[in-house]
Amino acid sequence: MASQAATGEINQSIAEISSYVRGYHVYKVDWTPYRGEVLQLKRDPDNCADKSAVAVIKNADTVVGHVPYNLAPTFSQFLKRDFNKATVEVTGERVNRGAGYGLEVPCKYRLYGPKPYTDKIRQVADSLR
Image (tube, rainbow, N blue to C red; front, side, top):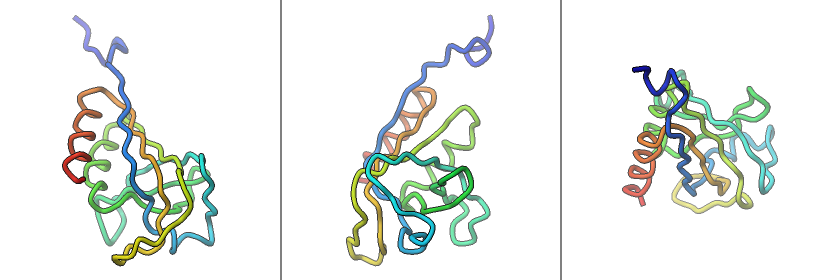
């Protein structure tokens, strides 16, 4: 019997998580976010501050922010598998919520992959609320 991956029968699912793009204050010279804009997520293992960092990417190669620290390890692990993908959609205007986070952009993260993986993403996100 062929594996599910070989036959294309993987049960695909989407996990959606409302959060923020961090670091806008650093990247604002390269990015003016607008509501509805969709950007890509990419692992950033060479990040000297955090080996689990996940970058928000504009135009295929320009880093314009990062996934929050508490979500990054789970997102990074998820994105290690080539068949998993992730995007982020801007949902509001930049804000400074205080607490040393700098300027952030409200967003909705969408992670696409097999249902067991997206279910795990949802569990982790729920536990962080």
